[in-house]
Length: 372
Image (cartoon, rainbow, N blue to C red; front, top):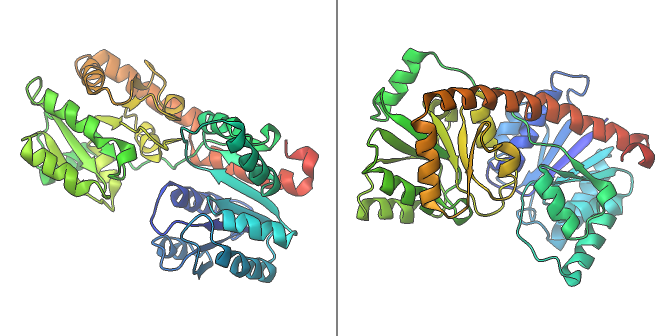
């Protein structure tokens, strides 16, 4: 089996991390060496795939979902490589080229959830695109599957496969203390972390609102904001002007496991596109509970009262109350920590994602009746 993944990402986002994880999983199976990748020129993902001995082709005109100039280039690559499966991630140009190529099964993964209108005028083009340009559609959350169906995607082509991640490394207590010291944090501090791109959809403002309230309620609670993005400068200015003293910006962190290992509680305040947060999954693998907004796929990752708490999006006071409920009840925290790992092992392991994805590939190649 030969699989060609096509991504339109120039940065390292969720889709790229998922494909990298699939490569890592496949390397321990009979599918080793089966994956090749097409990326936009100068993508940050290229060196990551090369480290894994994956053959990468970089092309122009692929840094957006659709560009007619990319279709001819991609079609030529497909004719040359002759893949059995063409797996696309947002790249509509690749699905069009793959349908033109005709000799491969087309898989499309929808990684994001969107609040979209479901009027007939919107359903018709989406139904036509998804029905004609994909043999199977992977939804990374039931919320995404519902999103796709509301826009007219054929139910029979949708397959729910949750994102999966490897277990995050566990550091010894002495190393955790050293990392805390590096960030100016004390052993008694209760660390609340958010690991996400600093963009409007992640709604870091709600987090800052909550942090500001907690400054006067519990000074032992400290917030780490890990990541970078277009909102970074504005958010830092806000923290400075409003004197929010319990917040630390780390910027982009290469070794994110350092932050994960000193985190007591994760937060996700997303108000847009969130499907299955990889950061939340990493935390669950370490037994870290979370407080997450009730948006998109979050309720399928954080089960309210089990491995964390959900709060209504854009409601900072509700976020504050949820953080304090977990912070102030050690028995509740320990129970949620135990169940965080249990939920992870039941639903979000890399082995589960990898085996289900490759099983879908094999079913598609055996024929339409097996792919349902």
